Image 1 (cartoon, helix red, strand yellow):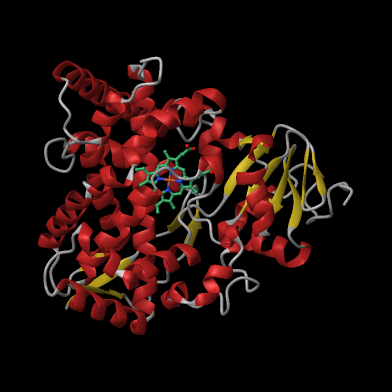
Image 2: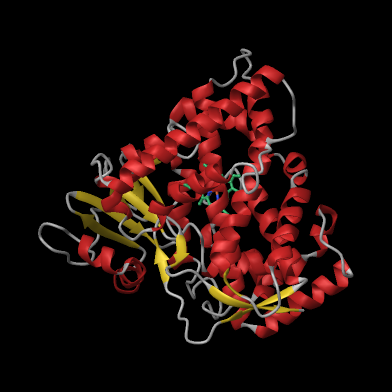
Amino acid sequence: MVATAIPSGPRGGRVLGNMREFNSDSLGFIERCAREFGDVVPTRFLYVPALFLFHPDHVEYVLATGSKNFIKAASLRSPFFQRLVGRGLVTSEGDFWRRQRRLAQPAFHRGRVEAYARTMVAYAERMLERWTDGRALDAHEEMMTLTRGVVAQTLFSTDVSDDSREIDDALSRIVRPFAEQATLKWILDNRLPTPAHLRFNRDVRKIDRFVYRLIEERRASREDTGDLLSMLLAAQDEDGSGMTDKQLRDELMTIFLAGHETTALALTWAWYLLAQNPEAEAKLAAELDEVLEGRAPTVEDLPRLRYADWVVKESMRLYPPAWAVGRECVRECEVGGYRVPTGMQVFGFQWVVQRDPRWFTDPLAFRPERWGEESISRLPKYAYFPFGGGPRLCIGNYFATMEAVLILSTIARRFRLRPIPGKEVEVLPALSLRPKHGLKMTLEKR
Ligand code: HEM
């Protein structure tokens, strides 16, 4: 087929383009684009042209088969991200990224990651010591504190919740701007000395000092404590060179940020969905009783915790923590029969593709068992892509899945989480997909 010019898309304002509609209701806007304009939809944000993709094959082209024609979307190159994660794995490109990915990869091998299972369960058990029957809490906040503790322990063997309260507070504050609807504005204004930005810069400096001190101490002791920092420190290229302190700092910060909020959200949405689907909740409880027989889970239990795994998969289908992936076209190419010029921003949306009735029957129903059905093997490869795909596939996908299944099982074995009547949950598509006002729930001991 001959590539044709871009198809038609939603009308926008003369100056802002589609920005106003997108900002007021991002999910509603992308759903409308797919419904009214099809699989390939052009949009515009001020002077920036963008292409929205809603077909798995087109997503596959951008992320995998045609990935050489794209780099990460322009929004990731803002000074805000640079200050926070520098040239870490999420933001870097080309040969530099390839080398860093090669160096970091062994730290994420299955065997290595499985050694962290005990930490994940121990942290969840410790949280449960504070949980009591009938207590009301914010499940999202609890999951964030938990996964932050796990990632700090597995990354640098540091118990941020105990010894370094100040660091934990700073770490929890720096992810806050990611959560605000005003993220774009926040990023654009990043250089202005507003109190929030001054505090952000102070917090990043504080964490920098902490991370550099850890690197220095570990380099000096040459000890392999089994954490990710040890692995990254030991990583060497064929020429014998390793990472500089700055590279290590950027990777640690990147993994820290990429690695805990997303997993916390996968768990948060799982609690939300289970609470609304008592049948699924009962099946999960029955599996946990049968497999665990009253004890906490271990890594050896994972193959038998099939339903728990499906619950996590199905939660990430309906509420993908990463609800969109973005790229910028750097070499003219063709997507779905349309010509894509260089400079165009291109987005694939998990939120829409994973809820599409062409691929999933009864797509809005929470049905974990669908993952055990034969039809699932016939899905187009990119009909489900919570971890992205192609060369930039999430390096922590096994880490995250294992952590989510273990934590879910540890908690669901002992508690049910009940919704609090009258508390509506609003979805906030910031950089990740969050519950806007948290997720207030009541604990019920099993
Ligand atoms: C449920 C949890 C998670 C979700 C949904 C998730 C999602 C994603 C997605 C969609 C990407 C690709 C972004 C793109 O292509 O532009 C990505 C990349 C990445 N993720 Fe995750 N992630 C999760 C957990 C983790 C964890 C636990 C870690 C580390 C411990 C991690 C570290 C990273 C890194 C370093 C990258 C960049 C990889 C590269 O470009 O080479 N993620 N993640």
